[in-house]
Image (cartoon, rainbow, N blue to C red; front, top):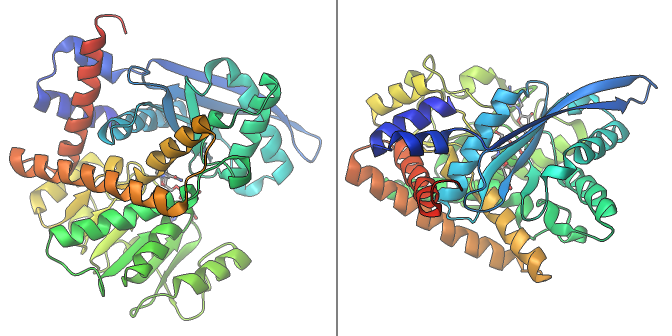
Length: 408
Ligand SMILES: NC(=O)C1=CN([C@@H]2O[C@H](COP(=O)(O)OP(=O)(O)OC[C@H]3O[C@@H](n4cnc5c(N)ncnc54)[C@H](O)[C@@H]3O)[C@@H](O)[C@H]2O)C=CC1
Ligand SMILES: O=C(O)CCC(=O)C(=O)O
């Protein structure tokens, strides 16, 4: 999917063959096996990957995912998208992504810690604050980042907070990083509502996923006066016509681990959820959930892509033809996370802490600037929002490669 999108944009930009090859292929693909002792005493071998798409514009930046479906191809696609995301936001980074094939929900905290520390040790020669800086993604969190910081720092002999972002505040994490991605999704959804002359207050939203991205998208949208009608997670979906109380839902999830069973809501089929009438539909969980089969049935006005790769190329073709849904493409829509990660990295080098207000206000300025760039490119060139976003990003990377010369 990522490669097909790249080819389409490279054709549109008329990239010459040399730059096309240099932009398309990842610089480094690192795969490791990790023997880890489980609580039962058994030793299990896990597979992990880190793909560094390119380092032309700075160190590689991107999350680390723990999920049973992780494989090298998925990680490589996610690394390529990180590349375009960092370039679109004008961050001084290349893109990277990592993943371990595991089911974090069925593992104990001790098993997760041993797995994370072993992965860090295996990839130690390939990471560093000026080489590759990881962050949380699906199935990982600030605790995972704390273990990576500790393992790397123990090896270095001193605390190296800039080795990862998305750390706990006590280890020099940044104010605002935990909510940054969802805050950005909600902020850009409201920008898109404005752009389409639709009111924000009283608008309705449906959100797939209630993890880091989905939950903070819900809280921020609710703070704007948007009614969150439907939410799903891996176990099921819930609905309330007049809007769910998302703060009570947070408490319910903290107690039970799922949105399912929340009082004051009805259950709804998770697949049906995506096709309910709403102003904003925000897929904030998995990839490839908006497909050629359901794209024609969507009843939203704004598709805010909180997840990476939620829309297949077949669905894009349907949406392009429909022309009645404003798509905020993933590399723009969920860029709040990596942007605040960049702020965290800068603060670590400065040995200084910015306030949450400073962080979120700088974030909104940068997101709005990229949103305007993308929407005006799309209008000027008569292309979709995705082609516009990827064109701006790929051109930025191709120009940097050309400027560095033949062998960057
Ligand atoms: N955490 C971050 O800062 C960023 C995350 N993303 C992307 O956002 C997406 C979600 O990431 P996080 O929220 O961090 O992960 P997370 O692990 O915190 O939450 C994932 C959520 O998705 C739900 N989910 C899983 N399978 C599902 C299914 N079949 N149907 C409905 N819900 C399902 C889970 O129950 C959970 O609520 C991923 O695509 C990730 O790559 C993108 C940018 C930054
Ligand atoms: O915060 C980061 O460095 C990367 C977040 C991420 O993995 C993503 O944007 O997909």
